[in-house]
Image (cartoon, rainbow, N blue to C red; front, top):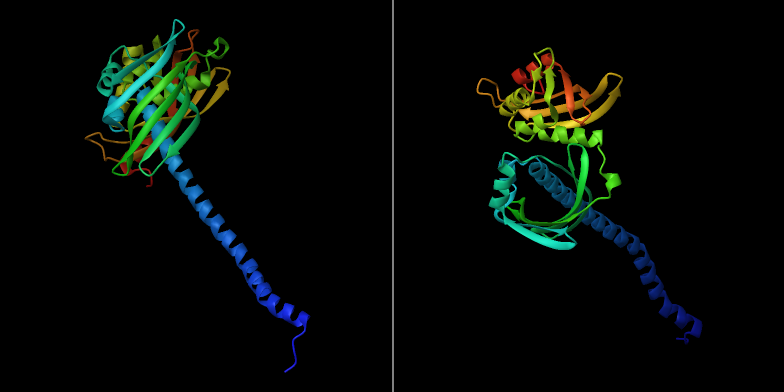
Length: 311
């Protein structure tokens, strides 16, 4: 047998390496693809979890802004910790309350609603806990107020998030930002229709303001407006009203809305309803509603009460 040449030996030794390298190169794109799919799946899962947390916080702020204690109790642990820090006379002051003390304050007759809009979220989540930073502005009757940076701890119980603690720092806003905004007013007005606090709806009207529903007799004055709001809240305890749009007209401002809720009237059928309409507002010099003429389809509304949304 003749001896192998140097070139043959090198070729013999190199060939397996080249074959292995080729196979590895063929598998590498597949591995990269699998890693990307896994990373995308994890990212999508995190996004979904974050969306659930944001939804929970928005629901909590909705209930708190409406001073709806019953709704708040469904979202908050009985022993939750509540506190804030704010600047007073150039000194930072810290306060804290039990959650029962907060409920007592919110239930008071002199309580007024607020609309809290979060501009930015930061979320850190583990399997059963979440830390949330929510940077928000407090708005009352269409006027932006203080900035509140909320620090929230959530714990999952029975696969549902609940508030374990909340503390916020209060910051003054520049005066040029504290101006009436009709869009914020409309969002706040829509929110309080889901408050189960009919007096909050009446607060958006002047003392002698008027609210007319379709061709009915106008409710004049806050007491009568209270009664109109109460009738809807009693019929639809889970009622929510969305602000769909504002349309500026020569004769006023059209507030377009959608009402959703479940009919719990003992004489009713227990169906869900979803009906849209609008109110034509005449605003006062105090940036409250002087006169509102509401319009929606009574025929569609009555049909849904009788047969539900899908029939």
